[in-house]
Amino acid sequence: MGKGKKLTDRERGQIEALSSTGMSSRAIAIKIGRSKTVVNNFFKLKDNYGKKNTGGRPKALSSRDERRVCQLASTGKYSTRKLIPTTGLKVCQKTIYNRIRRSGRFTYTAKLTKPQLLQRHKIERLNFDQKVMPWDNQWNWMVMSEDTVANQTRCNGEQRHMQMPLFVHFHFLTFLQIVYCKRRKPLGRQQPF
Image (cartoon, rainbow, N blue to C red; front, side, top):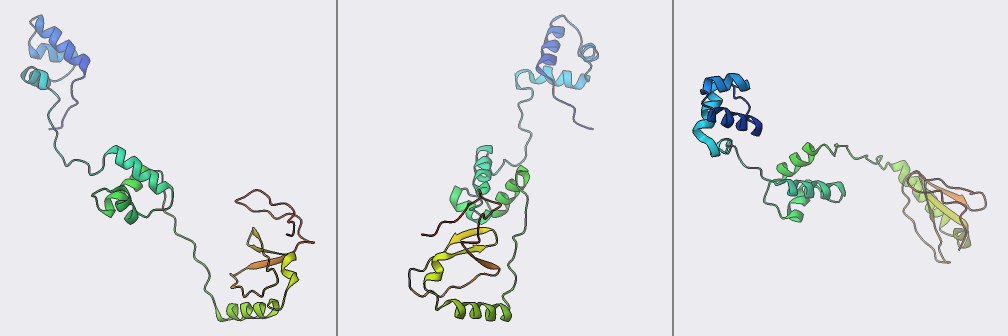
């Protein structure tokens, strides 16, 4: 048989009031719309009604620990493995992962991968390095931008060997007016040092 809902405080008060008038448990059950078994159980247990432990394994993490784990995970600095020593909890990695997943605040996204560095890329980098190694003052008027992020590059007269990432663009400052970046405010016109 299925388990019915526990009596509410109002229903408990009604049962006590009706039983003090001398009504039978069957009549009380009909009056409040519940089964006679629940009414008899209430009479049997009185103050202990609804206080019995329903069993089951206790939670490994308290609600406070769950909030702390989710807060640390939202910073993006910790993996599930690194969260265990950081928080000092005595739980396994899978428990931390389950709590983060069930919180509903996070979704798994795979990291983007860089394209493979091919031999032709290495040759292009070497050609670029050989071309710009004799530069002296040209670096003062050069802005290097990776995708949309602009960085000022200056050499101060010394020769510099640069390892270039893929898709790097150089612009002379005289032609560069505004550089936009999706993650930051517009940088405006770059001033040489």
